[in-house]
Length: 372
Image (spheres, rainbow, N blue to C red):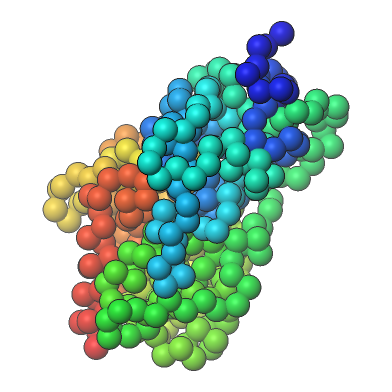
């Protein structure tokens, strides 16, 4: 029997039949989702609120999670300064050991936060064993149970992650305007589940950022008379975003400066005839290396994706590889030979992670200025 400091047990069940018993924390309940892992040592408030994790059970590999607690939300012009959305997005959280907080600005513990938002957590399991299993077999569905037993796994695993469109759960229902402090005009972000750090990166360049639901038509988008277009990050299988890809093609005809980030990078690839495929276990970390082929310089970057342009053979016509991952040669960024279009698979923000590539926002701002 596992000894638990909490008053109830927890379980993690993997689709291949693996069952681990640990301790429950956070909310009591049972959730299903794709089991993925992140090797980040810090930044769990940002990771847990990243909409790209919707539909997934997140395993954090750092052994102690919760040390600095959960800060109170800070909001400037509708943009969260220390979270990536207004709520926890993951289906559940798995850690080796959950700790009590010790930091001056902590408002509550990690366990209390999960409990308040009705998200189950499991601790005191061998997260290394889970990660090894996922790395060997590939990402798979799983179940997390906190304070409850899993009676019939099959009934929770009928819904598959790769077959689900999560955008209705993560996209804003109506347009949201973040009025800029400068006079650089409006940029429109097609928001399928964008991190607030990305919104802040654009806002800090002096733009007024208008986030629109990702099902908005090109006409509705162009009614804002934008000076630039951004397709942000978001959850799920990009090959399911059929309408967004169609809209992307139509928007490109206006030849406005355009930037695709993470999911946006993938949607642009599909829109222009390239291929996006499922990775074995994805890139989820804040220490992934990329190399800029235009300069030969290397950068450390933040990632959260399970799909990718896996090789240069999948790159669309007229697009050139800008960044690549030196570990597995995944295409991490592209630029168009004729049109003002750039993309990054990584997140060019330091939330959480390094500041190495925040200059990408400045590059986009210069593209907008040059376009008039």
